[in-house]
Every structure is written in structure tokens, then in C-alpha cells.
Amino acid sequence: MALEHAILVSLAERASTGYDLARRFDKSIGQFWTATHQQVYKVLGRMDANGWVAATVVAQDARPDKKVYDLTDTGRAELQDWLARPAEREATRSDLAVKIRGASYGDPAAVAAEVRRHRADHAGRLEFYLANEKREFPDPSALTGHRLHQWLVLRGGITLERGLIDWYDEVVAALTPSSTPARTSEEDR
Amino acid sequence: MALEHAILVSLAERASTGYDLARRFDKSIGQFWTATHQQVYKVLGRMDANGWVAATVVAQDARPDKKVYDLTDTGRAELQDWLARPAEREATRSDLAVKIRGASYGDPAAVAAEVRRHRADHAGRLEFYLANEKREFPDPSALTGHRLHQWLVLRGGITLERGLIDWYDEVVAALTPSSTPARTSEEDR
DNA sequence: TGTAGCTATGCAACGAGTTGCACTGCAACC
DNA sequence: GGTTGCAGTGCAACTCGTTGCATAGCTACA
Image (cartoon, rainbow over all chains, first blue to last red; front, side, top):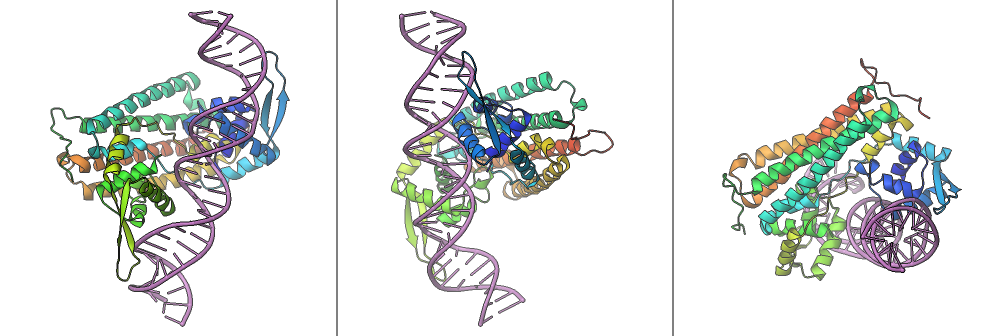
């Protein structure tokens, strides 16, 4: 009970094909929800069966036909209903954090290298978000309605990426034996 | 291919029963990985079949018998191997973020209330982490080995909770019409 | 005396998401 | 002329995790 609603929000913003939705889940929406195209098509089929969305087949030249989905009234009602229902706190799951915790049972230097790699990845993502913000929302104080809400979610991405980067820096500093002799060792067990 | 390794790390720290593991996944480890007891027992069974762990049945009085699991050499080797393998970037999934994005298709004030609720929840969690830190790691600069690594993960929890709280505050401020007329409205579509 | 709660283990059914594959046809590059 | 890439839709099999249920005996409280 999850991707459904992300799709509802996405379709409320703009009627789209499954293909297009899948691409959008790689970008803006994908910030806090991802989905492969297979998953999107599957769920879209179910939503269609439930009457939440309806498709219009559009013929194209030099391209395969496409099915443009849009919300039905039922879908719009469901979206409103879902928005009013309390949201569960989502479980954070991080392989990398588990690796950091277990570093002494392997090679802590290798784990540090891995953290550095993720740090670079998230730094790239942060820059991407910041560029987006500059381009899409040059004057945040003037925003209202769904544009304001989109910007707020982007702000969340930015804040969280910054937090991750700070944390990774702390971890790398602690795991890298430099001037400070924060020795990572074999002596346990 | 995930809970397995969290369990390996957990058992490397201390041999435990499934019941005990499940409880620990509600606490410290559960910070970045959660699991219900059913899931733990299931995976533990598979790991046993794979020869990663081995159980010793311990009889207790006034309590049911318990099976204490410990790592085998194969399990320890797998753990080392996994630590050396690169970790995927984990997909963040947040219902709440999707709700924020879709706020204008329902009642933005209700969404703001929901964000406030989550804010309080995370503030509580942050306090819990900070209390843990004070109690368990009074002198971080002296830490080495697995205690250092445990502390680093706790630091991650603290950093991320702070980030979330900051973000939620930003969202609540933007969604709450106060002196600044950041009107959330019906006028779209 | 009854009920709730803890320790302790586990099965069965389901739902969500991933991985791999299949098919069509155009455009662009080498 | 062949490969790569994009647009477009979809099925099948699988894994991971959740929900609901079952069992059993002890302790503590009302």
C-alpha cells in the first residue's frame, strides 16, 4: 500500500504513461520513492482494475502506441483519503551502517574506503539537488500550492544528503588512522 | 540478502537466541535495520541450513528451552566477505515525503499536523539516542575497535534525526499560514 | 480466579518489490 | 551495415518482509 499513492500524487500533477511515470520515479519523485517500470506497470494495472485510474490509448507515428493514465474521481477520492490517514514512521535500512558497525570483523580500512565512495556519491546527488533548486525554484518565498510542496520535498532531500555527508566525514575521520592514533584493531574476541 | 548480514554482525558481537536478536533489532541495531521475530527465525533457519551459524539448545527452569546461535567459521568468513563487497546505495522511501508533495490534493493543514506528529516522534528518538550516547560512550575519544564502530553508527542516527527534525520544522513553518501569508490553496487545477 | 504480559519458537499466507526476459520499431552513431 | 539507445508495454519467477495465528508455561496484578 505505498507505490499506489505515490503514483496517485504523480498522476494528480500530470496525466502520464507508465513509461513516463517510471522515468519520473528515477528523478524528482524518486527522491523519496523509487520504482522500476515493471513495478509501475503492474501497480497501474491493479489501479485500473480498482477504478482509480483510467487509460486513453494514444497512437503515435514513429513510436509505439501509448496508454496515458489519468485519475478518476474514485482515484482522487482515494488520494484525499490517504492524505488524511496517519503515515507510519518508515524504517531506515542501511547496509552501509551495518557494515560500519561490523567493521572490526573485517578490514576497517576497506569499510572506510566504501564510506568514502558513498560520500562522493551523495555529494554528487546534493549538487544535483542544489542545481535543481536554483533552476526550478529561484524565488522560494513566492511559492504557493503544489509548487511550494515540491520545493519542500526537495529541501528535505538537500537536508538529508547534507546530514549523510557530515556523518560519512565523521566516520572516515574516525576509521582512518592518521595523526590521531584512533587504532582500528584485531584485538577483539 | 540483507538481514542475514545484520544478523551475522549481531552474532559476532554476542551469541544469542532468535528471541534476543529480535529484541536487539528493536533497539541499537534496529536503528538502521529492523526485523520482526518471525523474520529473524526464518532467516536464522536458513543460515543454519547454510552452515553460517550453529545452535546450542539450552534448558532453563521456569522458562522454555532456548536455542543459542553462534557464528561458525563459514559464517565468519561470509561476514568478512560481505564487508569487503561494495554496498548498494539504499533507496530512501518516505510516505510522509510523498504526502508533503501531494498536500495540495488534500488538506495541507492536516498534512502539516501529520508532519508535526512525526517531528515529535523523531525528537523523542533523538533524545533517546543522546541519552544512550551519554550513558554508553561517555568518552568517545578513547574508543577503539567495535565500540568505536558502534558509537559511529549511533552518531549517524543522531545526525539523521537532527536533519529530519530541521526539515520537518521547515515544512511546518511553510505549511502553517501565520503572519507570513504562505497561503496553501485550492486554486490549482 | 481471571487476565495480561513476558520468554521462547515457529508456520502459513500474503503483499511488495526485484530480476530477468520478450517484443516492436525508429534514430543516431561508427 | 551493425550496434547502441530510446520509447513503449508487459509477463514470470523469485526474494524479502509483514500479518496473523498457534503453542506453552511462568509471573504479576486486580
